[in-house]
Image 1 (cartoon, protein in one colour):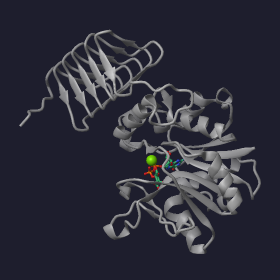
Image 2 (cartoon, helix red, strand yellow):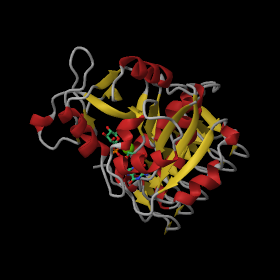
Image 3 (spheres, helix red, strand yellow):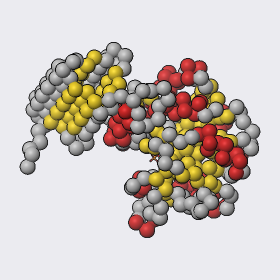
Length: 357
Ligand code: GDD
Ligand code: MG
C-alpha cells in the first residue's frame, strides 16, 4: 500500500472570482477537477490511499469526492481549523497516514497538471535512501516558483522560494510541487503551528546535510494558479497536449447536455460545460465555458473563462477575461486584457469599449 498527501487548502486568490465559490483544486479543468486528474494519475502509479489536506472550504471536497470509492482509491480528510501552510498541512495530514517511519509518502500540490511518472519517482526515492525527493521542472521565468539548483548527481544544493533579486536566480530548475518524503521526515515537522515547507522545512533539511534529491524532466507541467494558466491547462487536456489517460485529442470537448449550434465556431481546446449553450454564429476559441453558461449569436469569446450560468450577449466580445458565475456581459461590450467581472454583475449594453488607437 502506498500513501499520498494532497495539499488542497490554499485560497486561490489569484483565480478570483472563480474561487469565491469553488476551491481552486475543484475547478473543472476540461470538465474534471484538477484534484481528480491528480488522484487518477496517482492511483495508476500504485497509490492506494490519499489524505487530503484541506482548509479553505474544506466541506466541498468531501461532498465532491466522498470516500474515494468511485475513483478507486481510499480518501481521508484532514481539516485544518486555521490554514497551517504547506508544511503544517503535511504534518497535520500525516496523523491520518497508516504507513511506517521508513515508508515513502508522496505529497502533491493540489493545483498542478503534470505528466511526471509518479511510479518512477517513488521507486527512485526508495532505491536512493534519500530523506526527500523533489520533482523539478524547467520554466522560462522561474521567479514565481521555488528555485532548486542541483549538482551533477541530482543532489539538491539549495531551495530559494520566489526569488526577489536577479542575483538569486541561479537556475531555471523549479520545484514542481511533487515530493516523495520518507515518512519519518514528515514527523519531524513542528506540529500545531503554520509552517512553510518551501521556506522552512526544505532549507533546514539542506542545512542538516541530509540527502535531498531533485529529479528534473521534460514531462508536461503547469501550475494552474492564474486564470490564464487554468484556461491553458484545460485546453491542453482537450487538445491532447497534456496527458489524460483514455481521452482522444480534439478541438473541443462538449460535456453532458452542452449545446453548440451548427453555425457556431468552437475550437482551440475549448471545454463547453454541462448544459452550456453556444448559440447561432457565436465564436469561442481556447476558452473554458463552465456549466449552464450561454454565449449568444454574434458574441465572441477567446482565451477566457465564462462562469456557471453566466451570459455573454449578442455582439459582445470577451478576450483574455474572466466572467464570474451568473454575470451578464450585455450586448456590444468589449472585455480585454485580464478583465474580471464579479459574480452576478450585469454590464449594461456597450458600457465597456476599447478604442483601437
Ligand atoms: N492544506 C493546506 N493548508 N494547503 C495549502 C495551504 C494551507 O495552509 N497553503 C497552500 N496550500 C496548498 C495550495 O492549495 C496548493 O495546492 C499548494 O499548497 C501550493 O500552494 P500555492 O499557493 O499554489 O503555491 P505556489 O503555486 O505559489 O507555489 C508552490 O508551488 C510551486 C509549483 O507550482 C511552491 O511549492 C513553489 O515552490 C512551487 O514552485
Ligand atoms: Mg500553485
